[in-house]
Image (cartoon, rainbow, N blue to C red; front, side, top):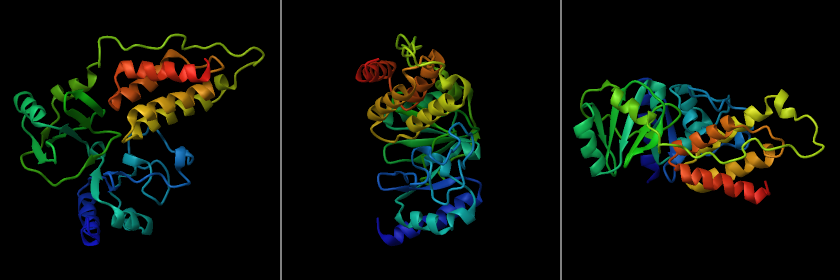
Length: 284
């Protein structure tokens, strides 16, 4: 992409922001810009479970989808202007504008949508179509072959205004996100691991340390845009290396990690294998 085309992205982004659509720049690879050194690994504290953009006061376009904003002053700031000049595309946070994007990746998925979903605004993509509905919901990938749902806590490329009339989000789409990937999600055994002898009372029980660790792990998985398998395994390994020795991890904690991984397209089997392998690596 030429410098001129990259420079042209900012005016378009500002126009979208003026219309109430939170937008952010995408770098090479069409992924969000990485966190700055001050925000790396969520060191700034962020709010991993927030439902609206803006995790901290960082002047850079950090935190993936959460960087999306409608504030023209932010987009025109030096750090953001520099990012826009390096950007290759525009992304939006649909949920921040009370919208949901049904991302159809191929002809088969489009054919399914045309026979199943109510007509709404449609935008052509490089491989398929985006169907945009009025109303927000939880995002989830791979709800069926070739179909992802992008709304809250997710981003989607902005590829133009599209054609057709925007309609309300149907229950059919909401139901897709409620379907389980399988009839029963495997959970690795021995989730509540005993503490080491002589370890005493675990501080995790009386502080927010464990809760923050799980929330940061969920966000790390959610923010992954590539190498999902590796990210999930390394995240499980990090959680177990910090919290796996004291017996504080419960089924609820691990279920949260599995849910985050499955939302990024991991199968229950892959989640279980990653968890078991991480435990073996640490000798748990």
